[in-house]
Image (cartoon, rainbow, N blue to C red; front, side):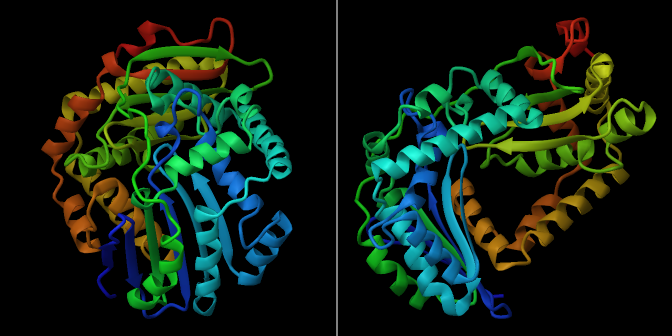
Length: 422
C-alpha cells in the first residue's frame, strides 16, 4: 500500500490522499473542523442544522429533487454527520464516478442556497429527530451525561440543539454560521481508494478556489469535567438506563493507548471485568460496555448499562467496586494481552476498505496532528505495560471525579452518593 499523500494549500485547506491499488472504489470526505462545541450560546444546534440544510439545494442542484437525483446517479453512497468537534460530508463510489462525487460534495461545502421554504421543511425534520432522540433511552441518558459532566462548557451542548433554538433558525442564521465557519483553513479533504494525488487535486481546485480565506470566528472551546449525579425518572420505561464516566485523556495525550486498553479490560468484551461480574456472575444486566470519548483537550471513559430499576443500585455499587479493584491491584498479564489483541484486531479491521481508510486519515490529521502508519499504531499498543495500566487506573478511576446519569429510575431505586464510594 502506498504512503498517504499530505499537503496544505496556500489558503490553508489540508488535502490527504491514500491510493489503494487493489480496490476499485473511492471514498472522499470533506471535513469541517467545527462541530457543536464551537457554537456560541445563541448558535446551539447550528452545526447540525447546516449539515441537513445544505442538502436542500446548491448552485448546481437547485432543489432537493435535483440533489437526490444527482446522488442516485452516482450509484454509491453519500452521507453526512455532525460531531462535537467536526462536521463531515462524505461518499463512496466506483472510481469512474469520482469526478461527479467530488463535484457534489464540493457544492455542499461551498454553494448552498438556503431557500426559506426548504429550510422550514427541514427544520421540522430536525425537530422530529430531536423528539426521536428523546424517545431513545440510550441516546437521552448519554445527553444527560454530557450535559452534567461538561456543564457550563461547549461540550455540554447537544449536537442536535435545543428545540426552542432550532425552531427559530432560518436562512439568516444558517448563512451567518456558514459564512464564518466554512472557510479554507477550516476544511480538510481526505480520500482513499483507486485514485492518485495529482488528478484528485485537479478535481478539487475549482472547489477550493470558491472557499473564503481566513479561519473565521470560533468561540472559546476550553472544557473541563465535573463530578455529578443526576437521576431522571421516566414511567414509560421498563429498564433503568445508566451512563457513568471518569475524566480521560484527549486525542493527543501520550496515554491514549493505555486508556484505550484500560477500557477494553473493564468492558471491552465477553471476558471483560464488568461483563463477567455484572452479567455472568450476578445476572444484573443483559449488556454492559465501556468506551472512550476523547476530544481535543479532554475526554471521558464511559460505562453504559441498563437493568431493572430494582437492581440499579447493586449494579452501580459493584461497578465501582470493580473499578476500585483494578485501581488497587492492576490487571494480569493475560488480561493485558487479551486487551491488546482486541485493540490490534479492531485497528486492522478498521483499515480494510477505502471508506475506513479515508476516515482514519482525516481522524489522525484533525485530532492527532500526524499520520501514523498501521505498524506504528500497533507498536504503540504493544508497548503498553501492566504498570502503565495500573497508573492509568489510579489516575482515571477516582470515585471523587465520577459523573453519573440515570434515566428511568423509580422511587427508592435511584442512585445515592454513597453508592459511588467503593
